Length: 510
Ligand SMILES: Cc1cc2nc3c(=O)[nH]c(=O)nc-3n(C[C@H](O)[C@H](O)[C@H](O)COP(=O)(O)OP(=O)(O)OC[C@H]3O[C@@H](n4cnc5c(N)ncnc54)[C@H](O)[C@@H]3O)c2cc1C
Image (cartoon, rainbow, N blue to C red; front, side, top):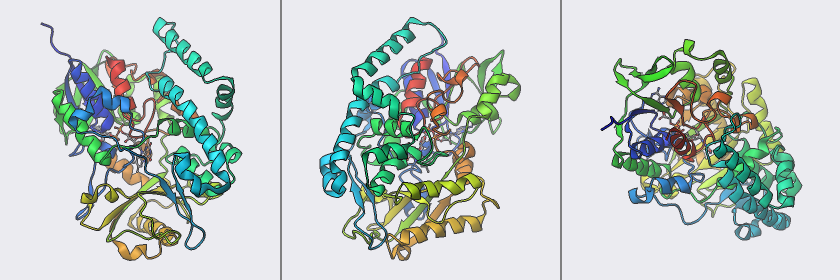
């Protein structure tokens, strides 16, 4: 009987867990090594103040792929999707209008949208027609355009047919609008600036782009094509189901096991060396952490070709997101609609305000009115805080990785103060509810979570880095080093709690 192949997965984020499970189910002996003392990566729940926990540093599971859940049979391990969408509330500044509660469903959104309601229904209908094509064409291992393999040509042909099946008008519209900036496209549809900013935000948050940056509309189209109701119980419930599936498949899981080096001989992987000095042998390695960390820190430099070294060095990983967690003794009342208890809040008054919040980051600074993306996970999971208390998980956009003058306790406190002042103008009195907080700058995100440059997606989602990711040599998960594969958010189709890079990377390995 032949020996089972020994595979090591580096990184116990959701993508690492998925890859490990699929490889173990296919017959490999799999050891998963996670550097931190718990699994889940950016999806893991953590205590940030005594008695208060996050639902993941990224609590957003609305892009997690149902096909990945099915492939791993996660329902057998307790995973369920929410029955309905969570709307996004964009408040108006205190006593300045009603703000906007935005549902994806155009009928539910109608009462909020005034003159833009009809256009919104047409906008959603266009995206609905696009989504099945995007899901079919994009959630697959990228085709190899450099070889004339029959399977790749067949896939290309099917994609072309799928595109044509959109119909002449939608196909031409897709070609026209894909490379646009998100601001221009949304202004073609809507006259309400707050609506435009609310829709544009996911296309630019996390990137080194503002709404007027070219190519950002591709991000919006992708985001809209894959967004659906999230996982019930949020990211922690997803991590629990993934861990259960991995253990059931026989994956050996080791936490507190940071990999310090990948051992390579004759341009093929032989194993890994942990920071503590222990070595483990492997026939192949799936690295589900940042590709720059893998190729520049873990692989001995002299083993990279000049081309690969150049490509990975210039893979852009500029972090622009800070995370602030607030522990609150109650739910904050938004002055424009105090009766609401929204689970998701987005603060960006309009396209220009969003662009203005981006501008200073280019010069290693941040503005006095940053755009905010807020989750309140305690509404769905009250056990994250004491009874009646709440957790606010706030993405602050845009905040530089390298702040002029450097990050220190003082500059961290100043950032928190900026965000509290901004919140206070929407939810007066919120300060009096705060009993604890945690401020994580992009530099902190790098230190704690191993995110190169503090880049939340393991690599920016610029148009040039979306489809060829992270470099041309590694764009299909394999690297030029025999047996070394990449399968985290820095690989196609990118960051987010989607499960796609982990599942597609494993498919490529198999
Ligand atoms: C604040 C924040 C907000 C975000 N918001 C959004 C959003 O709104 N929308 C969106 O699409 N995406 C968002 N993201 C991005 C998204 O969370 C990530 O792209 C995704 O979670 C990546 O998952 P992963 O499994 O690939 O990697 P990770 O979750 O990063 O896991 C990688 C794991 O590898 C481990 N590791 C690293 N190096 C080593 C080593 N040498 N040895 C052993 N283990 C190692 C790490 O400890 C970590 O556990 C956000 C991220 C952050 C930080």
